Length: 295
Image (cartoon, rainbow, N blue to C red; front, side):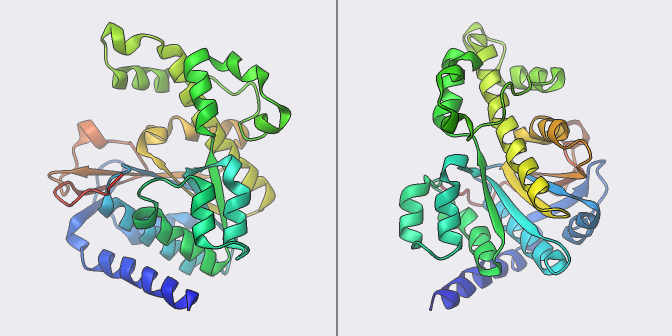
């Protein structure tokens, strides 16, 4: 019965994707027309694919699922495939593993793993496919309570944590944000005095977030030789190969990385170089007029 329900779920997501081919457009980072097939083909020479999303982009989530599904179909017989998610924090990994192995029910999994509000509509299909295919899933993110500690008290606030708590974070001292990433982050926050107050601490907390996701992926690559990791995160974390990508290259300099940036736009068939140039190796624009995911 469970396998039937999973099959129905996966088929419904696939149908939603195939029925809406005009809801998105795929480009290379330089703006040339491309395709989902090209993204999947590029995985042959990739260790980590970052899928940078807008969290409320329903079409974007369907595209992510399609890329993951095709990656599994194309490569799972040749190399280990791992799904990595910003949407779960590292201290919930044991709960996630228990669910994937069938030890606990989905209800208990959701009660104990602090899923995002849009988990059932947007991320559950990927987790269920991984469960069906017996693939590893990484709870990649830093626990929010520790990110909040840094945003309030700076990175030194983490010094009082226990050894067990520190194991859920990137190794100390985690790297500072690069100059390019810092500039982008400060620009996003705005120039007002209020927006800039305490920004150094907030940026340091963002770096903890990025570094911990990168370390989670790096650990998986080390453990699973020759594997392919597909990691989902908010687009800001990986656009222009900054943030999490930079941290991963500190942990695994030899890693072959590809970035897909997914954004919604009113005119999604037009590549705006000023906005989208080189934000990813591939840029997927979706129809902003489509309903948003509920978060």
